[in-house]
Image 1 (cartoon, rainbow, N blue to C red):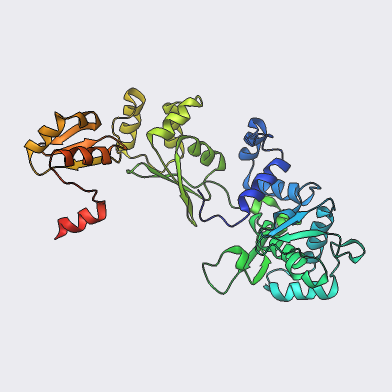
Image 2 (cartoon, rainbow, N blue to C red):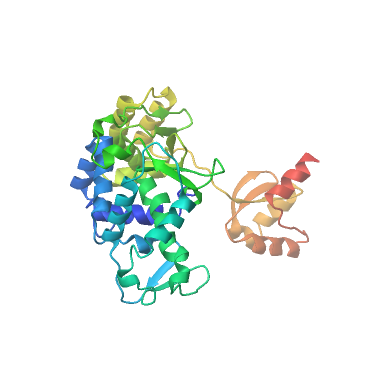
Length: 364
């Protein structure tokens, strides 16, 4: 559902939300905790998530590295590893780009055993999901220890707003980054600057006449949450999250106890403007429900009205739906072969024609 989401982010976010007490054991939002989190200022909310991750003893980052599968009863200390890396990063000057490969090489040279008690590289059973190989021994430092640090820098520390990333290609995913630096949010997250410097969430909704709604990145988070309850998710871009009003999404909202008037008030209060046709469409749906449906059907086209009349009088009539014209009729789902067989018995040879072939033939 989220093709633009970096690998591992959904798993990380779900685990983090549990750690922060925002999700129940059933993976549902905790109403009170979620309400407080969404109502908090942007900087305070992000800092709360960062603090929950930084101080967690249960959130094991090694288990989140996409290609690593730890196995067995051995235990590592994710909290100590996290603190070690943050202390190491704190010594780096701000506003300076650092080569990620060089940083990893220096770490391997100066602090190779940062997460290994007594330099133990043999008792940890970690399998590479790509090759199936068990990565034991110091010769696999880059594959395990180095991969963990790379994941922490290009994953959690970037997702939580502490680090900016750079890569040779403009559209490269975060895990392909080759350099990093502290972001403008880092000082606030680390507690050395005022969180009020974070950008305010005041951007209005973009409500379009085609029933799509764009929620800017800097729209209030609580507004985006409410829009998501009424709308069908489409995609995220660099600047906004895109949703669409559909009968199914509105019905789903109604089943949760939400009413159209709640959505109308939300759009009027937080939208730059609400197109008149959207106001009318919402009113009509509230009164009459779904009035238009688009569906894929199997259509039979015959060469003459007589052929259609003969088919409708045959035993195959039970496989037919509504007529669309004197030589065209809908065939019930899954009954295409039966109708073709019946036509053959009547002396008419037919075939399936896919849409692309049909279009090409019409163009000729």
